[in-house]
Image 1 (cartoon, rainbow, N blue to C red):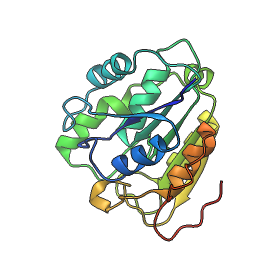
Image 2 (cartoon, one colour):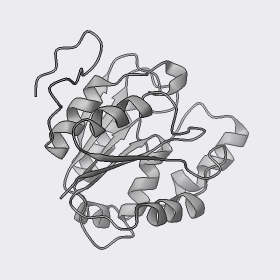
Image 3 (tube, rainbow, N blue to C red):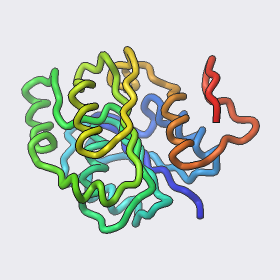
Image 4 (tube, rainbow, N blue to C red):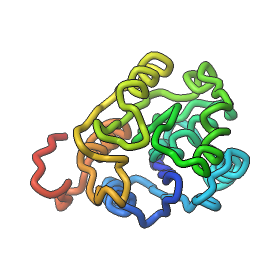
Length: 206
């Protein structure tokens, strides 16, 4: 059966931002069915809108379904996973978080429901086979040490901390993301076509 990858962008994001188009093309070249969702009202993301939208758009998930989230997109995926009653193949979170820093007052009001409404982590663990989390040493919004410890302790995630990648956003000029592609291909157990180039100046082995 064809494997699916659902990419969920972050707060203020869109399907054409940063590394999303690049990753979509690379995974499609591996035979993966990939969609980058355009989440509703991205400047003011709401749990009550984003989670139902994700549920409706993917029309069911199974162990051939994999999720890749960025920032608040990771929170959306977590809250989706606590609502379903079946296991998915796995997920990769980029700049995933439980708490945020560096926000202004307006941003704090938008973020408050996401940071204060608890997630049923036991249900999430029941419904996910594998979880990989990418964190950056200089993320202006996410504490990599705190988030990394929490993802490891609570969800048994594999945490990869990279140096000086900011918030992994288009504003940080992260257009190609070979290390993420490598982890995604491992998780999905897929291989590139012979003509596929992984990224600039890389030597990733599969």
